[in-house]
Length: 183
Image (tube, rainbow, N blue to C red; front, side, top):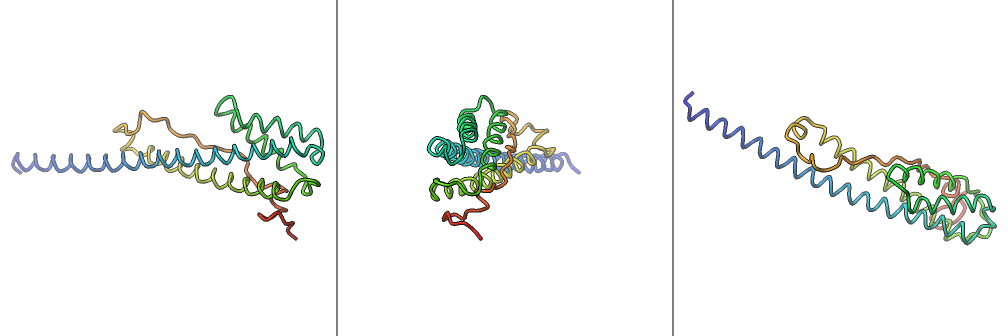
């Protein structure tokens, strides 16, 4: 092969690598945006759940009992303003545990509030799954050899999974979205 052919071959390989790097960088940017959108949705649902739990504890302490109402109010307040990222998961788990302890029948609590809380619990579970899926996809792509070697997105923090126990509790299991008891 002539030197010009080697030069053309090297230029072609470099062009392919640059195109691949550009394509991978675009994917990483889109995944970062997806993680941000999924986090915003998850955060909104977690804030809504904490707000509903706080309203339930504040407005209907007799239906919950004084101990559960006080614990629910405290855990909802902690979930709304956690001290750090790691504390957020602990606070959300504590609030979720309190919500799972709610009796199936809450006398005096409007069916609309129970249904809203049940719907929010479901939306939290879905939002967490969407967020964790976006995090998984981002971590997987950033874990490939080429992006690591080239240092694509090195300046961006690697997103963390958000792991909470979001199983559906007794209130959700026993009430449909319209607030009627299931049989």
